[in-house]
Length: 209
Image 1 (spheres, rainbow, N blue to C red):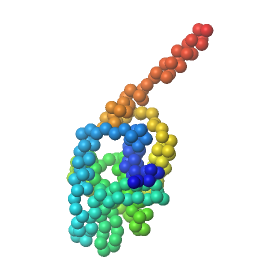
Image 2: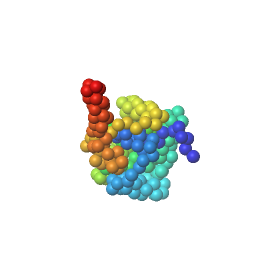
Image 3: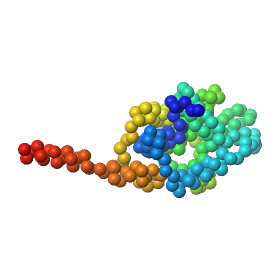
Image 4: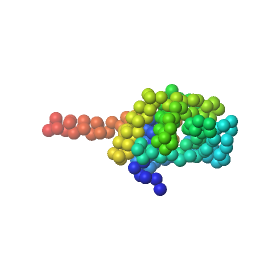
């Protein structure tokens, strides 16, 4: 059984995408699947079901669990590649979509690398993101800026989960691709003026009195 104090690595990606989405999933335990998440789930199932293999001096292990009590993280790697000559590990994360300008996916990958470093006592200098839509692998250097950003997100997620609170909705273009769009209803809740309306009514009553 997982230590409840450990943060799922996936929560970092959820938070980087949208703090409210992270809270809905990990604080309120709300989840809904759409076409995009179903595709992603099937992709990961296909990856996890493959047997370990060695190819050109690289050992490939799938569905590898990682954990770091110091970082307070736990999760599972889609693929771990180990160079048999140097012993260098490389985490590989599979994504359904295409490369993003934002750092959402890179933060998740960096967190995996940080856990590997703690577990194996080695330096992980790069990881990789494989995107289904373009059928291509993107190398990701695990550099200082990305490490710093990832540590920031870890602390932000920890504070969010400990608070038990859910941030207010803020509608954006990315909301339309979110599987929790109907549950979150950002177009309605982000523009909810009911409180201001009630306050205005009370103010008018006081003036009339």
